[in-house]
Length: 435
Ligand SMILES: *Cc1c(COP(=O)(O)O)cnc(C)c1O
Image 1: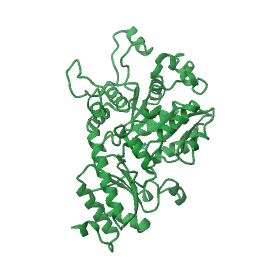
Image 2: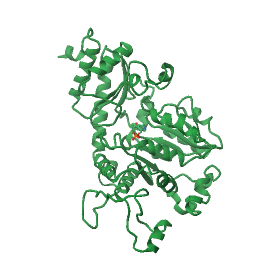
Image 3: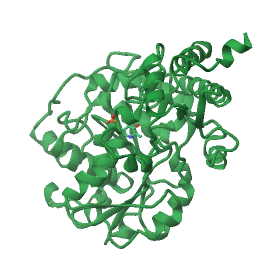
Image 4: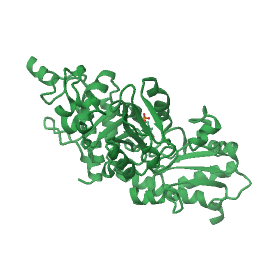
């Protein structure tokens, strides 16, 4: 099936018992065993079925199959949030005394996880100077468990060369983990370019309505753990926490997700509620249509802002002179994402005045909603950082990050126009000039 069809049907067939066409919400904690032997077989992972919803739930499982199919992966685990997914995805590849190598352009909370939380657990994160393959390559050693990048960095807007990063990983025997939240599998499937693991915040475009938190970890099923047994003993040696099970042998291509589930989700429990899985499935049904509209509206906004003398600069990968133009063509077929940053003349105060004047755009920290959203990082998400740290994260005092929604384009442009006018009352609006 094509992605547009998978988004609607993937992972579910009409329920054989009730004939329910909508995915049922299995609001249950536990599942009854036929007998002691049946219970034992389930606990030995020998019989298929459910035991307890901290391990697996049928509603969540439909979502897991749908997201895995959308990404072209073998299996998926869905968890409570994107951050839980990132934490589990990385922990599952490393252990105390080892490291991962990451690009520097990261979502703020991922940066905190990598720079402050994982090191406290004895896992070091080596930040490369840039997202270039050679910058990543030189940081990899025998203790490296993963290369990490965001396919489209949030909020930097950089586009990573997934194929080149995957080739670096393959040369060293290290899997590439890609956060594909901003791009979505509708625009890019990293596994097709050699990525091994894909992570999502389902909270954003996939859910699409700003109602429900969720995260997903998708495994391509292709990484050969046994060929890298020294680097990945957790998949190749008997697991004392699961009566001596060897994941790579017992689960084959499903080893990575099985261990994520039975080690991290089972023992630390960042479970996705069944109702959340249902709501996220509702959102995913329309993601293909929404992304098309997001992309088309974003292009119009980027062109509008760039042509406006009240705007100092626009960072949008869809421009022909963007440093990411070639990668946008290669990975997105020219369809640049609907996340962009721009700056108006007038610095921090100008940025604030613009932000405060918005009427249709919601002032908040989120992205990928059907609604148009705006964030002023210098006064919110990046407020605690020094000016130098902000600059490294791609944030200047006037920077505004926009997530362009799927409203009518005229209403979106009109709101931006009136907010620019409020920020810079002495400058004339090109929209009015055209009328
Ligand atoms: C929002 C976001 C996350 C975190 O997801 P939550 O569901 O909010 O935990 C991770 N990565 C990126 C790129 C994001 O935009």
